[in-house]
Image (cartoon, rainbow, N blue to C red; front, top):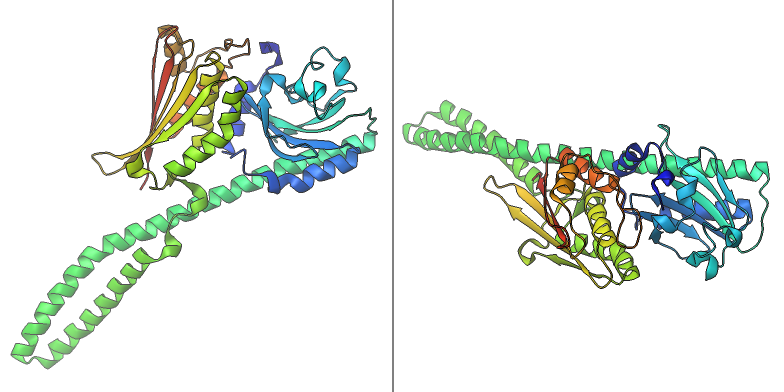
Length: 399
């Protein structure tokens, strides 16, 4: 694959996709009906809903073919996202670009392909809705138009899920504000109640009935507010929503599910380790899959066969009592020069070739740096040519 296959707005396209903050393994059911409808409309055996990031084509929903991912450079949809309308191949086995691909030479022995880009209103092609078949097909203009309508609905659903996630986050923030307010009012109320108790006891000694009754009212009123504060603090319904959280164990499982196939495809050992002490402590999963996934895919690309890629995950509490998420991705790959590292950290890296001749997509590391910066985190890179590389990410977490 060469750079001419990259859309002219590739960096903006990748940032647009990252803003959706998608878990590529978690949407099969959300788009299953649209995938099936696309196949029925086209009269094909197979339809796929594909999103394309820096390195990988992720099939987030499918019909007729159990497929989850493939290298971007092996996909047909990489051509579709270059188009403003559609991309069609009447016979994949007769096309030099695709005739040796696994989906042509082996099951499902695909021949016909028709893809429609998944275009946002801003003009960014996030991926493609495609249909495939073993036999030759002819799509009428009416069917092609229906596929475009389905593609638009897929983008609309992605936008809807994004809005829902944003509302969930705002609800979490509101609940956290309630908890903070409750904390803030407990101390002065406790002080008032304590003072009222003292005056109340003195009042009994002095037999000041009117003052005693007034103080008793203050005491009861203050106690009721304190009880309310305790209720707010202990209400399980006000805890952050689980859908917006990871812990280290969940994060580890997700990374293994998504990236072990890529490592196996290149015969690379891939492992993820977590810190036991904080393995179940919750933290926000905002952009974590985009950041860590790009680093892992990049490491796999630049690590030769029989090499290794390791990920270390840790959650620490710093001196200000704030959680700090630490992510370290280490590989035994071809390494980086000092100029390479400086270019990445200054967000000016260019695309280079991986160990298998695949394009390295320097955009991926630029995107990682951008996302880390937006989360007020830091990125460190330790590497030398021929001696592998280690990427260390530190991300502060709000408590």
